[in-house]
Image 1 (cartoon, rainbow, N blue to C red):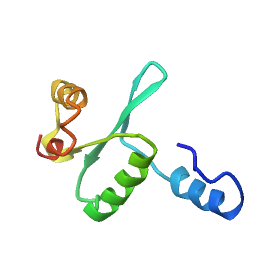
Image 2: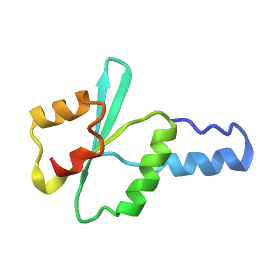
Image 3: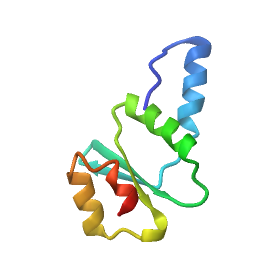
Length: 93
C-alpha cells in the first residue's frame, strides 16, 4: 500500500500507519494481490479490526477473516476467497 498523500507530514503520518501493519497471510495471483487473510483470536479487537479493514479496503485490498479456533481447511479458505460475497460469513467458518 502507498499513502495517497505524497509530501510532508500527511505522507509521513499515513506511511507510519501503513508500515507498522502485519498480516497473517497474503494471497497472490502472480504479481496481483488477491486478498489478505487474518486469523482472529483473543488478541484481536473487533473495533481495531474494523478500522484496519476500512484502511486496507480504501487501498482496494480485501480482508478475509477466520476465527483461528476453527482452523479453516485449505478447501474452506479457497471457497471463501473465490466467493466474492463471503467476506462477512467467513468469521463463522
